[in-house]
Length: 105
Image (tube, rainbow, N blue to C red; front, top):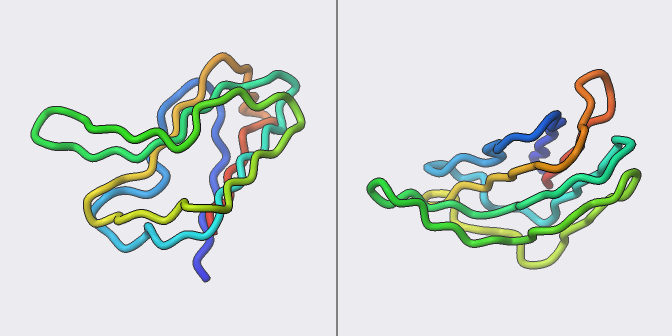
């Protein structure tokens, strides 16, 4: 089983699984906030049609410091046309060692 590991630092949008591939067959997504402050996350599927983005939000929430959010139902998608992205904001995710850690299985 392929695993994808990410450490997100700062307020940014990150593509976790790009479209055009076969990476959408997943069973769980773990979002662990290792920072000392809460962080807002917006995990979504994105379909770029011409110049307009079409988004479907999976979860849009605040993760408190030291808390892990586990998504383990209905997280697979068709990655031939959709990409999985996350936007983080309102946090002080530290580059030195307190990131938002993401594990996709």
